[in-house]
Figure 1: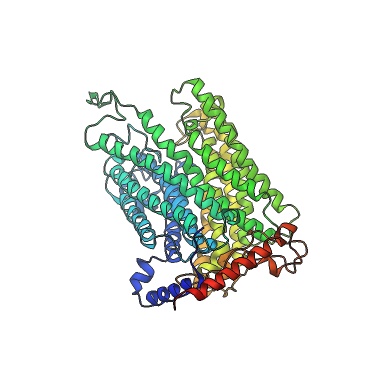
Figure 2: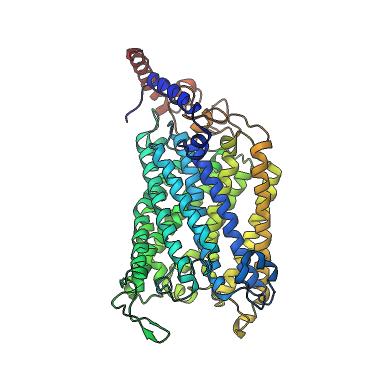
Length: 626
């Protein structure tokens, strides 16, 4: 592994720091190339989009829970999308569902979660001054910002935002005249997503290059903290799968604007036959879900990596099965690419092919179970410190298990055919993907807030926020399993016209009330977050007594992260409560020669190698020209 000599590193950092001190406000805080500033930009953008996405869900939950309620009071916000009778417009209802799914999956859980913590933690935890390319890093955020602007503007156009569900299946999405949400709103959706994918590819290339090339001295892959493994594998997933969605979107643009027939065949509008022949909407499903299923783990793996770090730190125990955790993430990443067609069991797939995808889908439960058991074993008999971050991490494990169990049911093709497009599916993916990933984001914010802003968040507000959100999410999504098994279909505007579904009116009202309660609880987080940035208690350098390298930087690291040379790494990141040790944690940069009382036999053997390396570095330092 190539390394930079300490003397050269120190000079280079001094010059770089000097350079950044003289930059303008715009260059320092807006068009910044500092990974920490870019991480904050992603974080604030993700929080903004989470408010928008959750607000849209509350509007359509009002419609579902109270179908006879007049929503005239929303007219100042929604304008003509409240019809003359004072109810929500039927076509706009589908647009709300579409935009909610798009925003939460891509803009919040992909860009908000991975963009924030990959940017922030990768250089800090591997011992690097910054990302491999600060300029590409800046570009990745601004492509995302441009994508966000286009998607946001599409909410306000006269014909309405994109409709057709967040999966935007043809032919609705391929025919501009199909409905109001198939026109300009759909074109803006496709443009926004193309820019979003460019952003993700730029970011992914940067993350992979940084992890491979810029690790500090001694930081082998076997000593990487688990969040870095998660971010690295997530970037690989995105780099392989996002271009497929880009191709799907480009072909859809060709069908919409240039008369091609990739997805269209034998279509009639108003009794008039269109000239399109030879295409198949199932082709779009294959292309979409080839990204769509890896996307589940693109949002889930970073959350699992963050949770691994927080659970080990606050259990004051080494993570159980470090190598098994890495192997399980690699297994999940590989299997994620070969199970996409389990979303298509009702598309007319050959039953034999369906059985193969069913088998592969059920196998993915094995590495997922390894992670869940390892989390539980790490917690077992740990000296647990229940910080808000720890509670959200444990909550994530709960959602991962409960949502994952329903995934085994949906992975069975015979059962999935009955449950497909019911509320059972909504409950499943919201628990295992939405709630679990959101809890990973919140756990990460609470845990690394002192490093982001140099201050502490209010713990009492954090506890209240956790319990309200944890209980609220189960109250929202647990009943959906029951009504889904009963056949309650999703994406329906109203159920009052169907005698079979009137029975579940009270339960639907309960779900909507629980959703409003859960949404309201998030304002506790917003108040805590923004108040603590300016008025929170000042943090110490290592408030959680953690082992990883980011806690060896100043409380608020400047550009370049470490004021002197970057610390070398000697040990893995989970030396907590080691027998014989003087304290209950030993940071990664502490040599084995300083901890003879707790060293294992093979660690004592490494002391001689340490001394040889240090002597060589000392000699090399004085060989450098001054």
